[in-house]
Length: 378
Image (cartoon, rainbow, N blue to C red; front, side):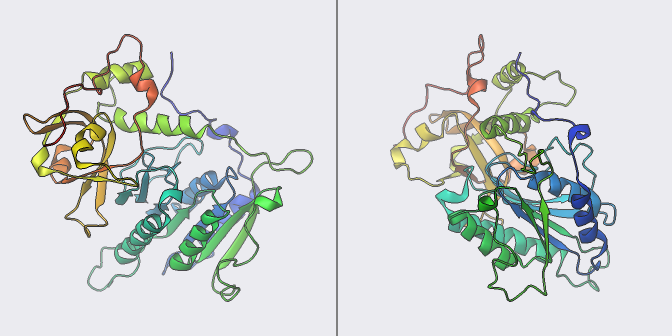
């Protein structure tokens, strides 16, 4: 029976080279505590950026009580479901470097896609806004007026898209964030690596930023990088299922896809008045008379437009629109977001994050997500 656990090896099989440990130690212990280090991790796809970032987080947490983590990887995010850009404050060590875990971010945006290529300008706007929030809340504040607050180091883990538009996005991020440390993970296929030095700055900031170049963790007998190939779609589906597993108590026996499908199908949804919700489609346009058809049986971002500007609504989580009753004017939504927070939501964001097909095709389970009683708007 299919399991909901994410594939991967245990920490015992994760190899952290001495070069990686030395790089993490130099960031954590060779830096001044104020302002704390801002680390930017970049490199080719599957080179080990996420594993190094987890190791760096653990190293920083041995010196600092908390560490901020800015995650621009909408396809394989570290602490959220796919489609999010987020800023998370971490205060506990990661016990297993091989297994990601869900955390509630401090702030996040729902981009609604697993790649930035569909809308790079909005993607960058979200990243810059998250970084500005970090600067305001955890870096540039008046210590005399806020004696209980402390500055936090920041780790920025980036996607592996480092060519073409992906390279341009990376350069824009580096110029805006201006990190104190840039960690470039190189692989043996040199054509896939980023350029040497401060490639984003025309060579005018080599003395300001600490550039650390390390190799991917494993090499074969010919000194070629051994890259960990991942089934990206499977990992995204498992992360989405892990997110909606939070709708139920942790002690409820749900360990398989079939058990989760049955549990979600029988879970009482929230009733959300249509009159209280605005609907925004991301990356596409939908005719007004097709809005509810397009919304039914989909995953939406749950946002609060009153917090932040209208174009940059903070998101509080995901929901499954299980059904729509236009006669009663109600949306039926399944979400692990607490009711106290859900009551603030006034905007649904629909992108291209989909319900995993395996949840809709469980044998013997009639999916309650797919409803036939949705009427078009008048």
